[in-house]
Structure formats: structure tokens, C-alpha cells
Amino acid sequence: QVQLVESGGGLVQPGRSLRLSCATSGSIFSTNAMAWYRQAPGKQRELIARISRDGSTNVATSLRDRFTISRDNTKNTLYLQMNSLKTDDTAVYYCNVDPPVLSGGYWGQGTQVTVSS
Image (tube, rainbow, N blue to C red; front, side, top):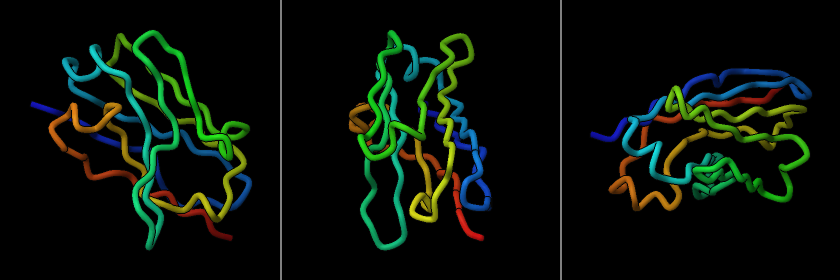
């Protein structure tokens, strides 16, 4: 059974940081590249950061100076460190495999990040 449980979101002021976590089922985590996605209000969900099984990362160009993706293979957990947050970062953040079709189309509940003064 697929498990994707995101946490760590919240309401923060611009310029602050947050660290998101994603607890996953071991089977899906250990055998796949993982990614963070986000869906801003009125927009489609988009992939923002990806990490391969061996730790190679790729972050969207517009975010790579502020966001870092990492994984702990011993804990089956995915992370997203977000620094210098901006109001445009307000969205629901999701984790999943890359591509998400490999999880059978399953999505967790996501975690809401709201950046506002």
C-alpha cells in the first residue's frame, strides 16, 4: 500500500524558512526517484524538485537558490528545505515518486504553505 504523508507546512512571514517532510512506504521510496510538487491557488500542480535514488538532485531553475531537496533512505523520508520564502511560494506541497504514475496515481493530502506578512 502506498503511503505518502507530507508535513511541516504552515503560515510564515516572507523571508523565513520551512522544512517539509514526507514519510513514505519503504517499497515506493527505495526503488524510485522522488519529487516535490506544489499547487498554487488557481494553478495546476507542478514538479519543483526531484531527487534520484542515489541522491542526484534537480530543482526548478527559479527555486534552486532557495530550495533544497534531500532524502534519508534509512527513514524512507523525503525533505524539502525552503529558505527566503516569498508570497509566491504559497501553495499546497505534495511529495510523490517521479513520475507519479508509478504510485498508481495516488497522492497524499499535501501540506499547506502560506507565506504572508
